[in-house]
Length: 205
Image 1 (tube, helix red, strand yellow):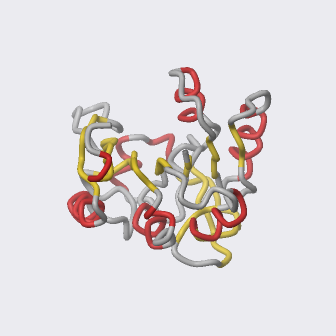
Image 2: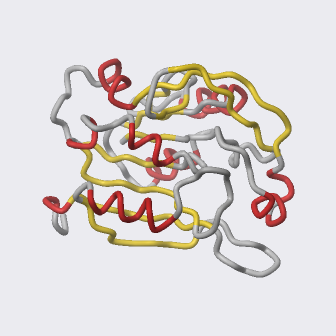
């Protein structure tokens, strides 16, 4: 399982607690979150933390914006709709990190497992399209995609819900579940959802 946008490891810990038996590799670009992620992964043989980096469509240095709640940190500018719904998420600063491609990462972490079945989890605050851009080879091995998707613009230049949904379908996946994620606490409007897609050839398995 590729845990992209791990923050401090909440998703990986939930998966392990639920009985997920296989390897998890977590990726996180914010230095403070990455340090906590390393600590949280200690003692878990199946859980590996990659070096601090962000994933995208090319290799270069980028600036990651650091949110007050850390979970909303993103490589993209945050829009006022996000801040108004969650004031603590306002950006406090930024720091440089490395941007690498998922295809290149697998050469480093899974060189002996080409062809192995993979699951991809994305919680990258509007950067989902770029993660997919950097994974043309990896996508051939991915059987499940679990991703956050915005129903309204929350980050500048993020991929809109229907565009991302359609793109994943065109890659040969079908949606098997959508659940509410980020809600506006005042209006109860659902701003983001979490969606699960499975590769068509996987069927119901």
